[in-house]
Length: 263
Ligand SMILES: [Zn+2]
Image (tube, rainbow, N blue to C red; front, top):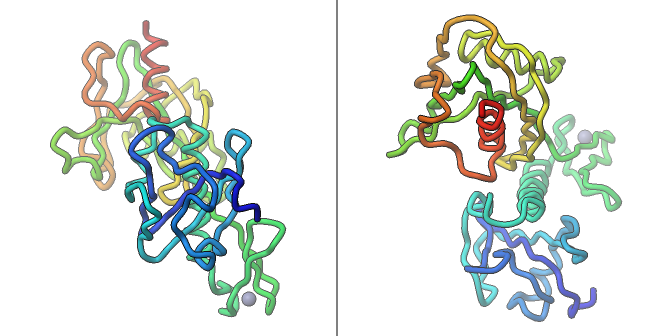
């Protein structure tokens, strides 16, 4: 490898990513800029390209000091850097998770080996092959006239100022996305919806979801929540909304879209 070529470096350790305090946050430069031994650099994995420069993943068991930056949460990049750069950083986390959790064959227990020409692990004993797992899930913003259905999720309730957000859930085996939207909404809130429309998607690397965002309108029923998932759910007037998810999240994009439909 040409050690003078500038690259983006996703340097991970113990579930965190090394970030710079300013600029694009993700370190960019050539190998000679990094205070790493050749042996450590040899573990690098190509993640993709960003702004015509290659992106590499380097994962270490212990945080390595490369001379600059601080290890931070992946979430701290969300909505702060360009969406594409966040997606690539998320892909780096997903690849690291994939290689870590597919060292042995799930079918016969033999040690697996990476395939050189694609992102996959293969067992040369029984020929079983694995690809990075992507778990589809739906997320849906629902409108009833000038009000939006927002819920306080069990996982958010401990926060001082908890976030109220739209409903979401994982797609089940053998289910269409549209059916998943109807089922999740009914299971979590007991209401029926209509006019289900696909909006956009967002990879959600915590650890390997792909969120598919929809909007819908209220059809019938009274809200009755599934208390295993939710603490509360209610219709909120668009002029009197509680604390919402951060800009940059798909949930916020859906809420913004519903608000613009109401106005
Ligand atoms: Zn096997």
